[in-house]
Length: 598
Image: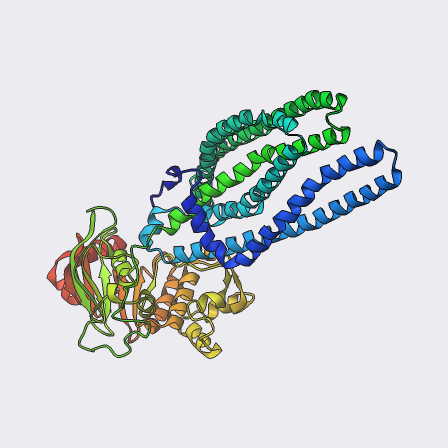
């Protein structure tokens, strides 16, 4: 599935897609069956009304039989009431079916997205994915509510109308049906024209969603660089493209509706001319002519509504195409069929085996633009190893490979002596934790964010101990509601330092055996830096850790320092030994501290 797959679509109607949708509908088969059982009585009551009108005119009005007319009127009223009740029941059942299918489909999509790897999200804008989960799934719901179900009912009514009209007067019926070929040609023409419009509408909507999501998330940067006007211009262009596509779609729908209406009116005119002559020659009763006009209206009504139904069906097919295209995108990172390390993990690994080991690792995000090239190193149990290097050398990539956010291109990453590709991913990520530079907090309470991954499995005492160890107590005391304080989207109501303290407390609660820290003290003030360093000392005590840092002053006490350069480890040792070597580390140290002193 490509990031521009919005522009690559298959057939407008695909029986294969309908079969796949049926797989989501089958669990609700009883509702579908109930809906189908309601069609025959609804169609019968629809067809009964014109016939009651014929009886009222021919047998009672023209004969002056007012008591008989009252009886037929009562039957007509009861028919209307029964039809109303059945239509309400039918609408409720079809809507209920659609909502349940949408519920299952949306859950399936979300579960599928949760299984995707980091590379997938690198190539698929969040706005487009939201369009799949929200707009496209809702289009499928519309198909159940007003598309495929209504078409089945229309087929029953049309079949009944044709049979009754042929039975009443086949010559008059053929007059009505003479215009059907013209109608079919018009419908086919507008259907072909509309097909491209439906697809273009969905494509432009996805682009609009993607832009809005990105622009709103980056509003602070937009305002900082005074880019509001340019962003408005981009949105206006995208919005205009969507409006034009929607307008063309509406134009074809309206044209089809008007064409069917015009042909229906022409059919009524023909009936009045031909049927009126038969009434004069007494070959047809007046009531029969009126009934024919009513049946003709019922014949053209579903065809007239075909435009709306076709729009719903086309939108549903296009959306289904996108939905199943997404569901068919297999994750590149999956659990092995028989994990060497399953759900229970390895509680007592061999002490002689390194906790983390990279063996000849090659990795590139795209093609052969290598970020890591033949990178090898190991981290012993309980060892605190610092990783330094220039920006873009692949330090964060190494942390991501440890949690198997990406798979290596060549070589191996081993945790407890087992290739990460042989671990159950869930077990691996419970064992290996990562605190990123940009801490992500979810909307909700502070407590919910701290318990992330251990909901219901932590006591109040454990939570309080983690808060104390992370030096986050003072932070909580400044919040009006403490642990119950609401965190706004992405934690924007907290400072960078406060988010880092909460991330450390969260890591203490999650308690991974191996931990990677990516620039944990960057972009914070000196006071927060001191608090974070003290909290990190508690967090890293006795824990295998990889500390990624630019500020060399933060990692001088590490058990070992690795210097990453050109995708591989060029130097390894303690701070004093590396300075004595006069190599890369020494030059970086001189540059950083020389700049600080200058």
